[in-house]
Length: 133
Length: 133
DNA sequence: CTCCACCTTGACACCGGTGTGAGGCTCGGG
DNA sequence: CCCGAGCCTCACACCGGTGTCAAGGTGGAG
Image (cartoon, rainbow over all chains, first blue to last red; front, side, top):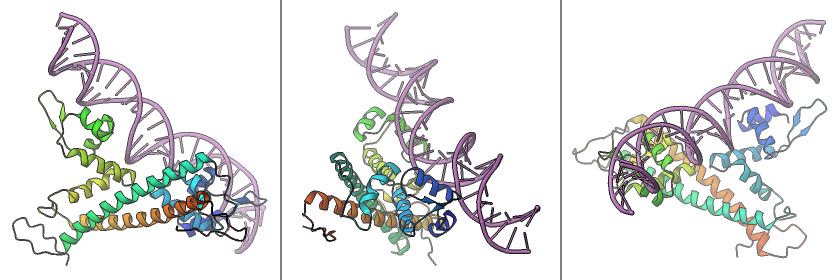
């Protein structure tokens, strides 16, 4: 498919798709006229990239971890240098920390929302009884 | 405590502490000479802020959710406007998505690391037998 | 042939988080 | 008195992800 279709299917601007390519996150073949051609599986890939980006990982890191996340994974994994593995390990731990932090705060927000909208009919002392209808 | 100490204890540059204050994420009193004075609990607060920032939330959002995360929470929560609640709900859901995405990818990386370093002498067939040990 | 939609590259610009440096004040110790 | 450490404000600069626009090629439909 060409860039327009990929853009629509991933809800990602063409600009960004070219940027991701420039950053080595996705690849494309070119047809004779110079147009980019994308494989079907790029759709998932782009979505995944967006997710990681949104989760706070920089393209530099994503570029490193993506190759490990491909379908026929575990077979013929690319030349895994020790540095690479160290980086990955470190990054995995960072992700774990992020996850924990996010969960803690998400739960706190959630709890707050529950409390405030759960209508625990608190005494009129402080009000803020936002009618959740 | 003054900014230097807070900076050390949170491993956060003074510049950033002032920035967070400017963004309304933390507050400080000023002593007569103009120096900022921070309360003890700011240490945790700053750490939390850093976590959230690192997790991808912008200061704008953090400013909104922080008030809900304070110790004597649920009591006297600030004027919770309906928009506010909507924002929070939305943001909570976004956090959940982020968490899921992060977990998926963290696990994938983890699995890859296990496989590659666990040395499962995979048969040349298809492998991907990520031994969950 | 002309249009129009779609593609190309390249550049400039924004925004948010962060570093850095200048110029100036405060305060405690030699 | 002077010095140095710590604080202040202000401002410019960077980097990464993203928008946007310009100038141009391609190709199908009228």
